[in-house]
Structure formats: structure tokens, C-alpha cells
Image (cartoon, rainbow, N blue to C red; front, side):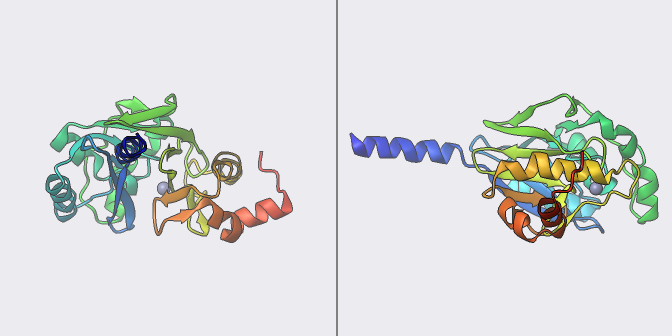
Length: 238
Ligand SMILES: [Zn+2]
């Protein structure tokens, strides 16, 4: 009886595993994440692939692992996070989810491509508006959509509760925070998002951000100078 229960528990755990693989794409070394579960359906968060070579790296990985892309999800509308979405739409017919509050920022993708000498790609059309969504799913996986404006007005973070994985885009990085000097940026809104929407999720949560290495909320509470200052000085960012 106990043995059967143990096998059941193992199967339950196996079924809840979500795989996460990261690629750093384009000249801004933007983190593109592929997520998939036991159904082999996959979602791509912040597809930043920006050349034929990077498209091939992504497509080869998808093929080699037998994955079926169904969804492109963006944490925000900056061009370095958006460059590969049209490729995913055209190649796999994925739906594209992003907050429409960032649509006007996304529209500037072409001019930013020119600045960085990148081939201009299409600005992808948004199929699912994350400004009004509380969760989004693929396969048997559900991600909670947490509004975290500040870096951009429509910025969101995505939480996979079962594994404690949080995709923060450019809201918070390992020991740093996102820029707020770009159009639509708001420092007080960013700090408010971090302090009231991210930190309370708990120390054990792993942060997968839009650039650089992963971290944890516990680490950022101790070593992120912006967070530490706000907590210690009880700065009010409302
Ligand atoms: Zn950004």
C-alpha cells in the first residue's frame, strides 16, 4: 500500500516538472527562455533571436527535443525581447501574449533595429492581452501573470507556482534593477512593483530575469542595493 502511494507521489511530481532552458540572444544578450512540460508543448518567453543563425539555434533545439511551440509570451515590449516573435509566429503559428499597454513601445522596434544594425523584422501582433489576463497556460502548465510596471507601463512578471520560477523581464536583475530612463519608465512604479509584488512572493522563489544570471528573492532581499535601501530606509514608493 505504502509502495503504491510512493509510486503515485513520484508520478505526481514528475507530471508537475517544468523544464526551463535559457538562450542569450542578439547584441543585447537578452535572455530567451523555452519552457515545456510532459506534454512537450512549449512556450517561449521573450524571444530575442535576431539572425538566421539564432533562429536556427532555437529551431534546432525545439526539433531535437520534440517540442511543439504554442505560445510566445513577452514580459514587456522592448525590441530586444521582441525580435524573434515574428519568426515563431511565422514558423510555428504560435499565439503571442503581451500587455497591450506596451504596444506603442513595440511599434518602435524598427527604428531600434536600425540603431543596432539589425535586420528589421515585423512588429508582431498581440493575440492575448496580458493587461487583462491573470494567468496564461500551455500544455498542463499555468503561469500566473503579475503586473510589474515601471521599466515599461505594461511590464509583467510570470510565476510558475509549483516550481517557484519567476520570469521578471527587466524589472529586477541579479543585484540590480531595470532602467527607468527609457520612454514610459517610472522609477517609483518600478520600486513599488518590486517591493509589493515580487519580494512578498518569498525567499525561495528563483528569479529568471531578462539579462544576466538567475537569482532568488532571498538573495535580492540581502544583496540588491536598491531593494536593501528601500527596505532599510522604509522608503515609500507609492
Ligand atoms: Zn527592457
